[in-house]
Image (tube, rainbow, N blue to C red; front, side, top):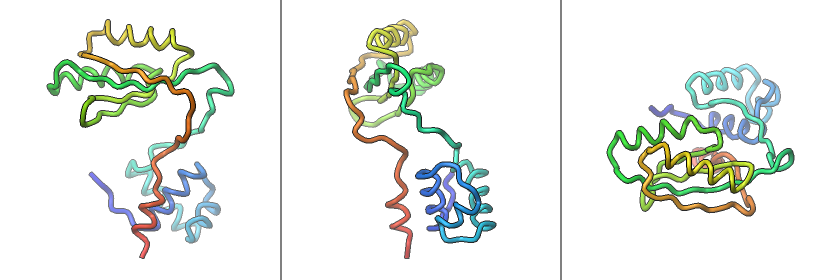
Length: 162
């Protein structure tokens, strides 16, 4: 169920994406509201589940050797239970940091972060042994991150501003 948001709510969300957790005064200043109404709106957004949490953006490459791999997965069967079984299994694997169900030629695109290629191959072997319906997979080793981050609300804020 979608929550109706106005331009001020979108500015609050954009400020949180850009700056993370903010004080009442800082948030209010960024969205042109007084502190109390800004904080009330923020609490409403949190309670509605729109703000899912606050996270640190950690550069893993600065503290450990890490290999990022993008993986396309196609399942053998396309019944509801097949998707459920695959998704339930994938949710429990820490190395799979993102998994997106997709339309088109593949069923899922995953982002995997592991210490190296050997660890990635071990993960794939475990997925295949788990018999969770994988028909085929395609591996793309990330050589350089060009851009990453949360979905931008900039266009939504501009579109909703009178």
